[in-house]
Image (cartoon, rainbow, N blue to C red):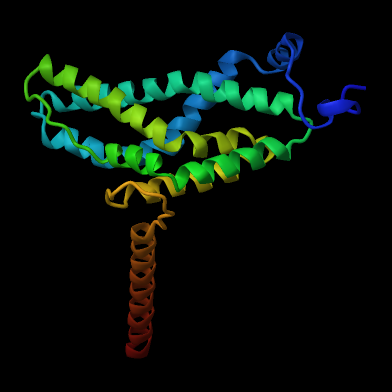
Length: 233
C-alpha cells in the first residue's frame, strides 16, 4: 500500500525496521570487507607517484616502514569515509522504490561536482608533494600525516564517483572498473586553475594510444622477422 499512495510512490524515508531487515541479510562485517577490497582495487593504482615520493626521500632502512605507514594511513582514512558513503548509498537504495533513481541522481550530482572549481581544488591538492623528514621518528610522523591528508583530499575529489558503483549492485563490477580507470586517468593531468570546466584526461588517452601503437609496431616487426626466417629456410 505505501508504494501506491502519495509521495511514497517515488521516495520514502526508511524506518529503523527497514535498516534492521537490510542488515539481517548483509552483515556490517561483510560491508566493511567489501568496501576495503573496493578501495584497494580502485585507489591503490593512483598511489604510484606518492609512493615514489616516499621512496626518493627515505633511507633504505626507513623506506619499507615509511611506505607501509603511508598506505595504511591512506587506506584507514578511506575506511572511515566508507562509513558515511555506505550509509548514504544504503539509505538512498532503501528510500527509493526505483533502483535506477538513486543512480541517476548520483550521476547528475557527481557530474556537477566533476566540473566544479572545488573539485579542481581537491585534485590540485592531490598533486602536492610535501617535504618529509629523513630520520625516524619524525619521518614516520610525516608519512602518517601525509597519508591521512592525501586520503582526505582524495575523498574530497572522488566521493561522487565512488558512490556510483555502490548504487548499482547489478552492475557493480563494470562501473567500478570504469570509475577506477577514470580516477587513474584524471590523476595524470597536471594541476590547473580552479574554474567551471570539464577536463578530458588527454594525457592518459595519449599514453594508451602510444602503448597500443608500440604494441602494433612490435607485433608487425615480429611478423616480418618470422616471414623472413621462413623465406630463408
